Image 1: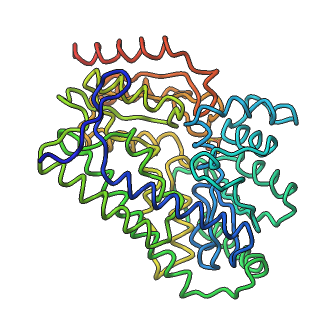
Image 2 (image 1 turned 180 degrees about the horizontal axis):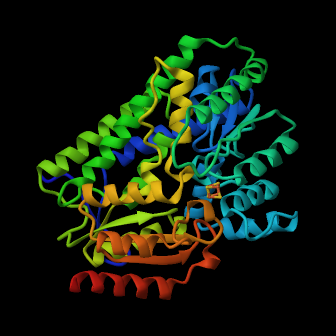
Length: 420
Ligand code: SF4
């Protein structure tokens, strides 16, 4: 029996269900219900954290951690973001800024959340006792968290990381370490617990293991044909983002790894008859994941690697050097680096994953995670001798997405690959 049940999509295309998705559902559901109970008065505290913020330090104080960006991605995938963005615009948040921020704030203003549909009984996002950001990804997260700090009247703590770095210097790490340590008195006060270095080390150890496993499962896509795609990865990354620093995330990725290895051993390809292997650069287009996944499958092209999914591999974590290694891990992330470092990274991934072409998503409201604006596609085409396609769209705001144009451009791109 070949693992990977085939599922007929609405368009009659074949997509292969990952069995571990059932476990994923349970893990994510336990996580959201746990936060909901705390929100309703059960023992515990909730911290909101940016997606590459100081989660391990928060968990060391016993906080359950909510990630507004994850909530925004759900709004995007549910295609409801456009209902909410105008509400944030109406209170002064520009249509040009991050559509994650605008859709999340808009949903809050309207008193709605897609969590209510996904998890019956949950009426709102969990209420924060504290908000913690890191500007290693962008400044939008700071403004986003400051908004909620005012709304909920809770402390906002943050790290302002040096940006766009070529080298990570000792002075940068010392700067971030100082800011991490400066958070501790507020974390102690809000959590009611004293800082315990052993608890922090344990949280980092768990996070590092999660990160290693996440890196391993992503790395299985190096196999020809690939057992899974970038589009699968965007779904299965939930625990790597929201539950890093917990045993649950580790257990989940052990299960997923096993299944993907079985696929490889049995010769199961995520994309039947894989002809082309692609790199996805930039944010996902959350409301179009299924359509794009099906179009690429139809064209026998597999998106095998992405900057986005790889962004939650934190190789530097080391529980024996907790503050410095955490500062290193969260400062050296791709989004926080200079163009030339990003280019080197992509070139390396292209070689390792045997990529035939690169898709750049130029996301209208996220310049921070769009790398097609300063000539990178042209430089990489020349350097690597493979074609790049730039798709103009947005992570959440589908008003910036042209279905027709995107489909046509992708078709033409694959045709170009077939001729090279
Ligand atoms: S990195 Fe982009 S999508 Fe993420 S919070 Fe910042 S502006 Fe928004």
